Image (cartoon, rainbow, N blue to C red; front, side, top):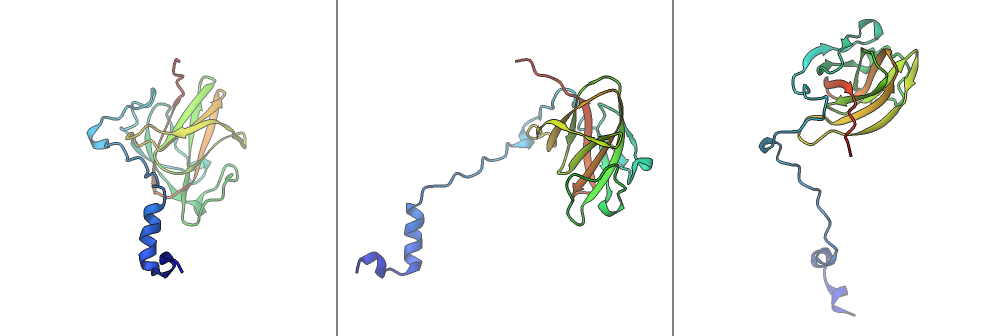
Length: 179
């Protein structure tokens, strides 16, 4: 019998761990307090938000102004009267809300959210598909950014699946970065 098989499991575990390849630890978050965040073009007003009650339905939905950030105070999901059935069924206890907005010129518009939520842009009872999505820049408070190609007209922004009662939101024309 070899010496290793005679060792107790309590002694063998540290030896096995020492022989295992090291695991990469996640990259540390940037020191946000020590840096001034660079906001995306068009979102310079992100940090100056107006508190606004989201609508539980289209009749009570506020009108958002493009280029102005707001802290939407959401409602319990079970109170939402959706403009269209949500694509994803939210978890029990989540919050939701709606806001209206007007597009004057056709183009790609970017929606910035400060927390986790599912966003649907609705026009004429149909969901407009997203054309791009990603994370916001580090230290800005923008959690995700979603782009939609929109024609002139009035739209409904339907938010579901949020966990926080207030969700920072901003809509602005998407700016292309020159290569």
